[in-house]
Image 1 (cartoon, rainbow, N blue to C red):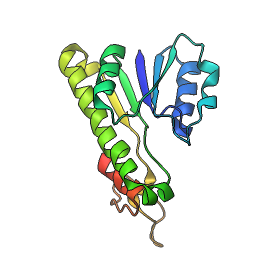
Image 2 (spheres, rainbow, N blue to C red; image 1 turned 90 degrees about the horizontal axis):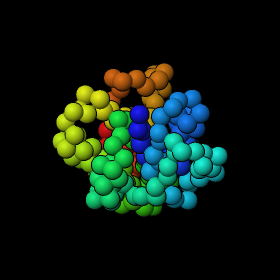
Image 3 (cartoon, one colour; image 1 turned 180 degrees about the horizontal axis):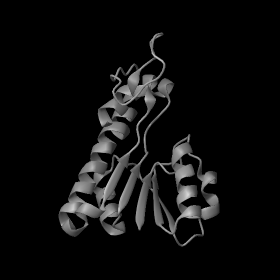
Image 4 (cartoon, helix red, strand yellow; image 1 turned 120 degrees about the vertical axis):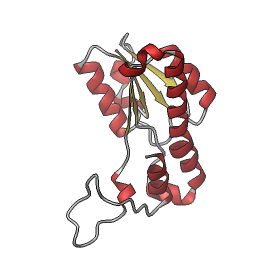
Length: 166
């Protein structure tokens, strides 16, 4: 199986890649923009694996993203790429709109085009989008936790951009 992980140099993405390479026989393509918070050292041991490949890309680049998806022919995409850190979102909200909203749209649109050209894969393809609890805002005193039925109450450009991508 061919799997794409977007944001594979992040904390969760790199853990997912380490799991996929060490515990499965799947091929993994890591797509990451490589920012200040990236952790390339977390997947460095897999650089020589024939089942692992890395491509530096910002998912806001729809044309290049579409080419990569069509060439790699994934069965599964784990979409974890995102600008994060609430403080940064306040200072640079346009980066968050570009990556978290437009980038997610590009993943969806590129996947749609890929499946349109490969209809036989339609029921064999999955896209898993990873969000954040930040979309729910802050817990009220009477609330013990969030769940699937909780209302979205984003309170920063980061959480608003993730809520939008959801």
